[in-house]
Amino acid sequence: QVQLVESGGGLVQTGGSLRLSCVVFKNFFSEYTLAWYRQAPGKQRELIASIGTDATPNYQDSVKGRFTISRDNAQNRVALQMTRLKPEDTAVYYCNSDRGSWSWGQGTQVTVSS
Image (cartoon, rainbow, N blue to C red; front, side, top):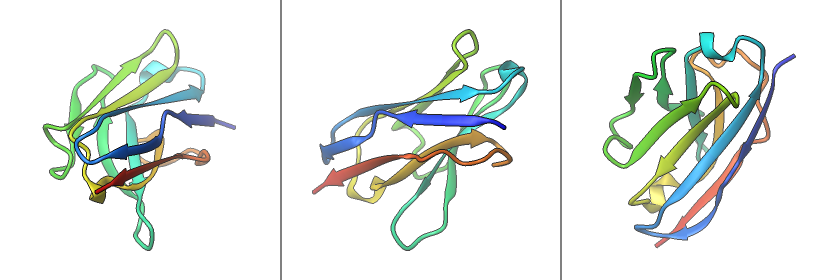
């Protein structure tokens, strides 16, 4: 059973920044492509950023240039640095494998006020 623990969310104003962190309790962490997802109220959960085993990142167009995903294999941790936040970034943010194959954590709420 994989446990995912997200943290770092909060309330920020438009244009602000937040750094999310996720600890993944999973053996062989370094062998997985990891991802951040988000789910806004009334919407489906969507993948917004992923990072490969070689640390190559990929981003959804809506966050490209504003968000940066990173990983620390020594600490089984994946992070998401979010800058220039917009109200439409308001959502619950989750980490998981890029296939969403693990049990979901509780997520961390990000609220961006206008």
